[in-house]
Image 1 (cartoon, each protein chain N blue to C red):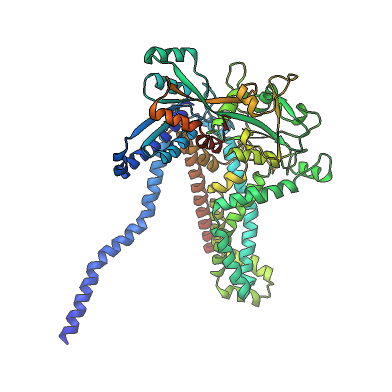
Image 2 (cartoon, chains in turn orange, red; image 1 turned 135 degrees about the vertical axis):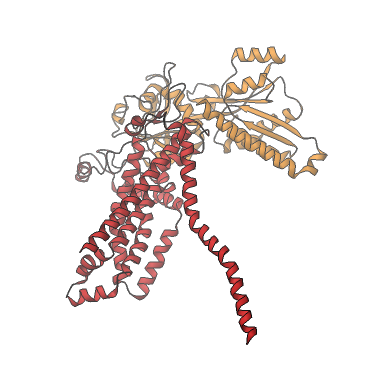
Length: 297
Length: 331
C-alpha cells in the first residue's frame, strides 16, 4: 500500500518536475522578465490527480509559477510541512493534535487549514430495485471478504437474485476509501470479497448499475444520473438513514464522505496566498468538479 | 569492341561491391526477429526473476484470491487461478464460435462464391480485421452486452429460466446479471479471430490444386463430399495453422476483453458470469504499480505464463502439422 502511494507520488511529481524543467528551458526569455516561483505540494494520494490538475491549470494562468505536486499520503504531507520540504500539504483528513503541535514546535507557526473539496461516495442501485436504504453493517456483509450477504432476499424480501457488485479497479483511491470504511470493521482492515466487477472509471460503475437490475455499486456522488437510484445510508439498521447530499457531506453526518484539505504553515502570503485563493475561486473549483469531487460550496 | 567489354566489367564490379552490404542488410532483417524475441525473453524474465523464488507457486495456480494491494497491513495474496480460468474459458468460447464460422466462410468464399460476391466478401473480411480492438470492446460493452442481457433475462420458474439453469447458461433468478460477461467476451473475441481464420483458410483452400477438384467431380462426388473428403484433408495443415493463429489472437487480446468481460475476478459457474483474464489484469494494473515491487514482478510472471501458453500452442500446432505430414507421406 505504502509503496503504491509512493509510486503515484513519484510518477506525477516526476512528470510535473520534468514538465517544469522543459518549460523553463523553453520560455527562458519570458521567465527572465518575471520572477520564477516554485510551489511544492505534497500529501494525500487521493488528491494527487486533483493537485496535478490544479498545478497544470494554474501554470496557464500564471506562467511564472511552477507547482509540483506529489503524493505519499496525508501523513507524509504533514511530515513534509514541518520539515519545510513542502509549502502545501494536501490531506484527506484533519491534522492530528500531535502533528499540529509538532508543526508549531518546529516552525513556530500554527498550521492553517483550508477545506478545498469534498469526496463523497454514494451507493447506487438499479431503478427497478425496491430497496431505498441500507445500513453500513449490511454494506459490510455485502462487500467484505467473508461477508454473509450474497442475495437480495437477505436485505429486502421484496427483491430477488444474487447481488451483482460493481466497484472500482484496485488502483483507485475510491477503491481504497470504500474498502477502509465499509470492509474495515472494529478497527480491523478487511479485503473485498471475490467476484466484484472492477470498473475502470466511476461513470462506468453507475452505467453498469443502471443496466443491471440486481446491481449494486459505489461511486462518487457526482456521477448520479436520472436513471439510477442511490441508497440512503444509516450507521446501523433501524437508525435514521441519510440521503447523500451537499449539506450532510459538509456537516459530516453522512457516513461515507470526507473533506479534502489543503494545509500551510501559518497564514499564507504572496504567491502562495494567491494560489490558494485561486484554488478556492470558481476557476479552481471547476477543476474540483472535473476531477469527480464535490466543490466546497 | 574493347570499350563495351570493359564497361560491362566495371558495372559488374560495382554490383559486386554492393553485393555484400545488401546481403548483410537482408541477413540482419532476417535475424531481427530472433534478436527481438530474445530481447523480449530477456526483459520479461529479468523483471520477473527476483519474485520467482519468493512466489508461493502452489497458491498462485490454485487460489482465486487475487489481492495485490491489500488493505492496511494485511499480506498480499497472488492467487491467479480465476485469471487463468478466465483466459481459458473466453478463448474456448471464442474458438467454439470462430472455427466453424471461419472455416464455413472460407469454404464459401473459395469454392462457391462467384465474381462480385466473392470480391466484396474478401474486402469486407479484410475490413473486419482492420477494426481496432478497443472498438470491438466498445461494441461488446454498448451493443452486444445489452442484447445478451436481454436474451438471457429470466424469471424464476419460467421454461426459458429452467432451460438456462439446466444448461448452465445463466443464473436461476438473475439471468445474465450484467451484459459484460464470459459469453459477450467470447463472441467479441470470435468476431476478432474470424477474419484471421477466414483469410488464412481461404489461402490454404486455394492452394489445393484444381486437379483434386476435377478428380472428385469425375468420381461423382457432390460438393459436400468434395469439401469434406478432398479439400479439407488436402488443406489440413493450412487450416490448422489458421485456427491456431485465431486462437493466439484470442488468448493475447487485451483491450476488447478488458471492456467486454466485466473484469471480475471469479471462477465462472454459468456461461453468462463475468470473468477477468490475465491480459486484462496486466493492462489494468501495470500502470500504477511501483517498478520493482512484488506486484510489478507478479504481473510479469503473469506475462510469462501467457508466453508459455502461446508458445505451447505454437509448438503443439507445429507437432500436429508434422504428424499430419508424416501420416500423409506414409500413405
